[in-house]
Image (spheres, rainbow over the protein chains, first blue to last red):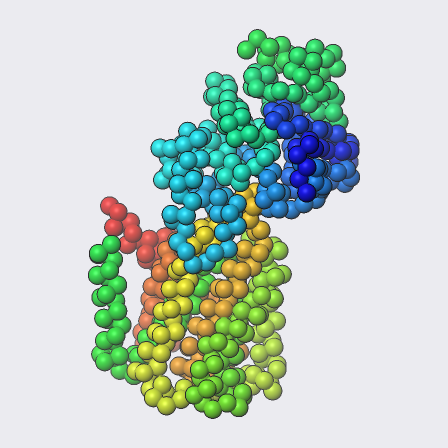
Length: 259
Length: 307
């Protein structure tokens, strides 16, 4: 079923149209195990659609998605997660009415296939592991707080802990630093990077901030108008004239180099 | 904890002593409170814990009541045997109907979910009204009587408690279980809960069926006390009752809706005994209560308790 030699993620000719807009025009992507892949591109390049199509939120019009050698095209989100593909959202998505600890517990219970047990008290179940995961993302002191009352950055950390509770082998992070101040962004992506290395999780992330991208990405894929414009190591992408063309005027890449 | 135990012990004593202190009429009302407490709590598992506002919950209360009545009247069993079968038959029938209604309704959320439950309820109401051979049509099913000593309100009262207390305990365990915490997560963020590996529709459907089954039990417990069942029990206006009870008592607590049921039933009895304009008075009182206590009666108590 799961092939150890296969790339962790292999996308072939993925396409999706919204009315007159070709959001994805046949995207190919291959991610090797252990990669920390950045997907960049200007607004409207199709990054979020790409993520949502891979993770079962949007059905593709065409193309295939293989996860660890297994065809998962059109698979339901809950099945994908149980197969080991976790994700976070651009707009932070936690369980606001639950405590931080409960947020992680819900994910651990689902992972252990215990969500259907109606008799035991959930309170202590997996509480230790949940506390460990909170500590891992630096939220040890906030376990009892309602998730909705946490600061934005802490909610992002919590969402990471929720995603990690599913014991993913691949983590898709849609703009993990959205809405953060510049300094906080680097801290945040470094946390993701450190934790991913520690747990052996491969990562794919979209990002606007080039400083963040160049700080951690092993490879970069550039999307433009629903197509892959370029792919390579950070140095290759930075030197690519087409990429420079797309980002001309923004000069973000040049800024990113300096940081 | 010891304070909670003391309150629980006091509640048990009061409940046990109640029939001795009350007239048959008020025992009958107490039975109504007990049945509607289960009805309101079962409804609130759906609303308060699952975030699903059903406009058709009376359908399951009604189906349970009819199922119980039919077992007593038409199954051709000895009265004792038939009576013993009533709770099971009521829960099974209500669960079965809830499975069908829920299967379609949980495919939508918010107001559309509500509209689907509403439409199914109108369908079931029409069946209760028109399938005269089975349901007696507009006349309903009357002359229901529990066997032997159970026909006495003071005895039936304890039977009602024997049915309702374990049912409430099961629901209490449910909302505090992994299933329950997952349900609360689903209410808070349906999309996120998918991405921790939860099948949202199945979880919602299971909740809907469990909620419906216990509403059905409540319906049967009440039907055999009142001695009759009418199609109006399934009418859409009847579905407002558990909504009002739950909101009145407080949807964010487990027993709040039960308290809401008690206040609602007693208010209705007291006021309708004094004026024919009782809906006007009831409406005004409920309006005042909801405006003054947005978190319900239990919300007020909890706020006091924490300050």
